Length: 168
Image (cartoon, rainbow, N blue to C red):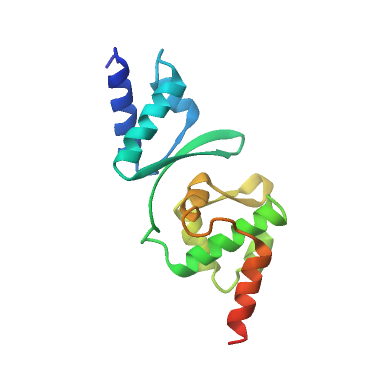
């Protein structure tokens, strides 16, 4: 199917984004879909179309590639509060301690909830194991779902919040 006009290209890309089960697409793939049209202009129009129907389209980097992630307001109901908390802690650790968190370290830190929370986050592509490096990284999808939950994630603030809960 040859795309011959700008509106068709925008419509095609928007449809692919909305119907993709992962809600995440590589920038390189979007550039290929844009054909000979101005990529920035296409993406701007796609972004505005998605915003009109209640979605956001966030650009993120992961493993030296750029991705776009489709998100909506509010939280994802398939994720439990415990899983959100686990993801928040892992995000804070990766930001403030080391971007490349060793799998063995995370298994030790989260041993009580590894099978339920961390494995769920890995299986649903919020976290990704990089086996050859023995690390876990937060995917663009994982970062995107946290955007509405915790605006400025900070390890010290998270630890203080948990500390406050223990003393009550």
